[in-house]
Amino acid sequence: MSVAPSVLDALREIVGADGYFDQPADLQPFTVDHRKLYRGQTPLVLRPSSTEQVSRILRTCNEAGIGVVPVGGNTSYCGGGTPSADGTQVVVSLARMRRIRAVDPDNFTLIAEAGCVLAEVQDAAANVDRLFPLSLGSEGSCQLGGNLSTNAGGTAVLRYGMMRDLVLGLEVVLPDGRVWDGLKPLRKDNTGYDLRDLFIGAEGTLGIITAAACKLFSRPREVVTAIAAVKDPAAAVMSLSRLRAATGDAVTTFELIPRLGIDLVTRHVPNTHDPFDAPYRWYVLVEVSAGRSESGIRDLVEQELFALMEQGAALDAVLAQNEAQREDFWRMRETIPEAQRKEGASIKHDISVTTSELPRFIDEATRLLETITPDSRILPYGHLGDGNLHFNLSEPVGGNAAEFLALAPRIHRAMHDLVAQYGGSFSAEHGIGQLKREELVRYKHPVALEIMRSIKQALDPKGIMNPGKVL
Ligand code: MLT
Ligand code: ZN
Image 1: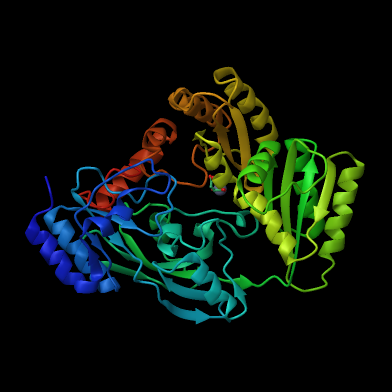
Image 2: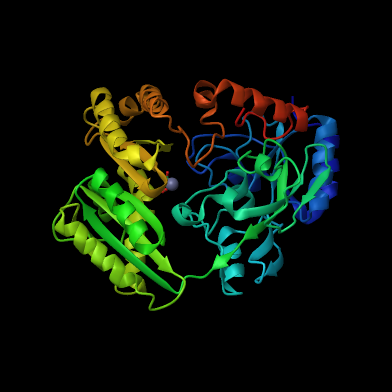
C-alpha cells in the first residue's frame, strides 16, 4: 500500500513549496541511517516551519492512517529515524524549526525549537554566559529534538545528567494533531503525572516534540583535563571515587579507554599520538571543572593523581597544559568510533551496570567473548563514570569479516544475558530504534512493557507515530 496522491498533495499544501522534498536525490539522505544498517523508502519528506504546520501534518496523517517518521540530525545508532522499506511512511524533518524562542539567564533556562542543532543551543547559552551541558561527538549535526526523543547522553552525564535531566518543559504535537503546551520553564510544578518524561526517550513513537525549555548552568571558569594510565578498571573506579570526593563532585568526565582504543585512533585518525612514551593497558580521560578561576582544582587533581601513582593505581598521568593539548586529549576519546569503523567490521554494545560492578563485569564479559570468538579484538570503552561502556569488538586481524559478523546474534545474546544477570541495561545510551526491539521484549520487565503498550495505545491508537520503532 502506498500513500494516496491526494494525501501527499494535502501534506505538500500544508508546508508550502519550500517545505518538502519529493525528488529521489533529496529523499535519499533520509532513507539510510547513520550506521548504514537500514535502508528505507519514502515518497515525501516534510519540513514544517511551525508547530501549527506539524499539528496539521499529524492530523492529516492520522485521519489517513499514514505512518510518520520524525527525524532530527539522523545520527541515531539504532535506526530510529529511518522509514520502512515499503515506502508507506512520510518523514517529518524538524530542521527548519530552529529558533531559540527565549533565553532567561536569571532563571537559568532557554526555550529552543526541536530543529536547533545541539551546538546552536550550546552557543545560545554561552552568549548569555551560561552553559548548556549536553555534549556529544555529533553535537555539530544532531538536533535538540533527536536529543530529547532519544534521551541523549554523551560525555558530561556524570556531572549534569542525561537529556532528561536537562529539561523543564516541552511542547509536543500529539498524533491526532492536538498540541500540548507544556513549555513552562519552572523548576517546581508538582501537579500530577510527569508528562514530559513520557515523551523524552520515546523516540517519536508518541508524538513530535517541537520545542523544549532547557536548564542552563554557570559556565566553568577553570577546566582541568588529564589522561592517566591506570592499572586496571578497578583502579579506574577507585580513582574516580577519590577524585569525586577530593574535588567536591567537580568531575564532569571520566572515560575509560583500553590500549586498543589508543592503537586504533593513532593508526587511523590524523593528528593523534600516544600521550605516553610507554604503552599501558588502560587509560582514563578525566575532566574536572570549577565555577571560578584559580580555584585550586588543578593542584587538587595533580595531588590526587600523584597519590594514586604512589599507591600503584595510576601508572602515569599528564595534564593538558593549554587548550590545544586539551583538544588533543579529547580527540583521542571522541574519534574512537571513527577509528574502529576504519579498522574494519565491528560488533557494538551499549551496556550499563553499576559503576562499582563494572570491573568485575569487564573481566567476566571479556572471558565470555573470548570463548565465543577468541581472535576478535575487544574494545570496551566509554562512560565509566556512568557505568556505561561501549563494549565493542573488532574483527580479527587477517580474519574474515563476514564470518565475524555472522557471530553477532550469538555475541549480543551472550553479552546481554550477562548484563541482565548484573541487573544492567542492554541499551544504556543509544535507545531502541529498530535495532533493539527484540532485546526490549526479552529483557524489559513484562509489567513495564505492558505499561508502555498501554501508553502507546492511549496516545496513538492508530499507530501512526514512528511505526516499527521501540515497541
Ligand atoms: C560514544 O560514546 O563514542 C558514542 O556513544 C558512540 C559509540 O557508541 O561508538
Ligand atoms: Zn557513548
